[in-house]
Length: 242
Image (cartoon, rainbow, N blue to C red; front, side):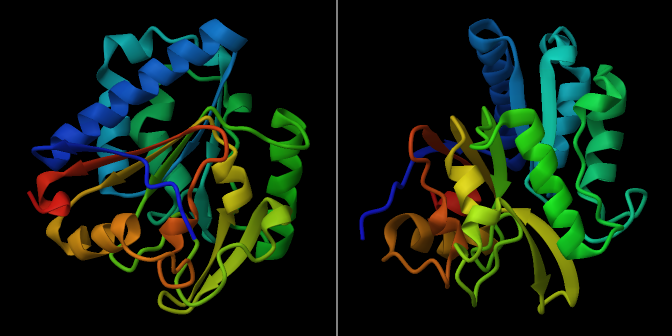
């Protein structure tokens, strides 16, 4: 099977990846607001996105954005309360959401404190209410784990399971934890999908995902192939092996 490999941009350090990611967010937001009057983004967890979000809180270009026209969603979330240290929402809120003046109603968090299947259905309903029956994000941010997982799509099962549900409750045995995740259907509908990947620990997996055979149950990141959009990989030299 042929899969979309995307564009690979290599940066010297993780800090450079974070800077590029922050500036990508600003450019995509500017362009979407100019073209359509709004911008919808899904956030990723992880160290590099966190550093990018902290930069957003300081960049004059980011602070100048019309945040009233921006809708923030989450690609996945751990099933924990919003003030828990593991919460992606908490991380994003502290890193930049509180600083940029985005209206609270524009931040659509996954309710990790609720019953997981019920929380997944509720988030699907919220996604559809804001973006329509075929929700399309302008920018979906993703990371990739050393095992090839992305969002909360983990190896060992079909990442396309319940794809039409748009949002799934997933139990991750490796972490003994329930999570909520957007499905590939939502992520692949985005106008732009951007992976941020850094570190030698992800080098072999990155090579397999981008250059190896299509094995989505082994490398769920391979399922991300936008149907009508761009796929970008922002990686540091350590992950790229150069």
